[in-house]
Amino acid sequence: MELRVLHYFLAVAKEQNISAAAQSLHLTQPTLSRQLKELEEELGKQLIIRGNRKISLTEEGILLRKRAEEILELVNRTEKEVMQSDDCVRGDIYIGTGETDGVREIARVAHQIQENYPGIIFHIVSGDAVDVCDRLDKGLLDFGILLGDMDKMKYYYMELPMKNTWGILMRRDSPLAQQNAVSPSDLWDKPLILSRQVDNKSGLYRWLGKEPLELRTVATYNLIYNASLMVDEGMGYAFTLEKLVNTTGSNLCFRPLKPKLELGMYLVWKKSQIFSKAAEIFLECLRKELMHENQG
Image (cartoon, rainbow, N blue to C red):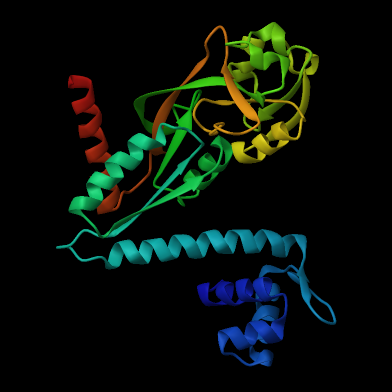
């Protein structure tokens, strides 16, 4: 399977039309059609369903599109890293993270690095722990930031000093909004909106003192913005971390949990990871910054 052909396949998947894809690739339509047919023969699977006006992908085609995007992205990153000059550190650093105010520390270090190495570019990819670990395992990220429980046997990691406080995002006209904090029993009969990655190990169910089936979960989310819209529309109460939603001047408010519940924060990377020069600089600068803060 050639990278060139994967590029052709992605163009067809994007345009949903072989003629349009051929034009964007500066190929003739018969040439592109032949390349696609040869790819299907090589894999032994039909990838494309040809309609009158546009094409669609089979299940195998959808899988190949996802993998092809990952492969070409990794190839592009590798080329950039190998081709960079020895006397001028440049490059891209990819960091996956969930939503947390602790990213401020990463941004502070990134800014310091760019003052000395303006050729280093940071790419922050937002997602929950499921997304971050998936991309990290595939080599699409240099680092991941994970909150709470994490597999310390699977990754190398650096524990970060920032703590994340759990609480409830709710409407200001909610009865619970009159309280300074929210206790477990306050939520036992309430419609709950939970993070997609919340499970029995997360600590939230233990804090609630109830089994999942005993609670009224009405929705899940992976990014808090969408959850905030559900809360605003009256769907329920969202478990989230402090400082993620600016409730000033809005219909929403945040109340911490009582007893308090916090999550630790870790910077993680694959044990088999081979760092670029830019990634090595970032890791060393972060270590020095955290050491300086501890001494201070």
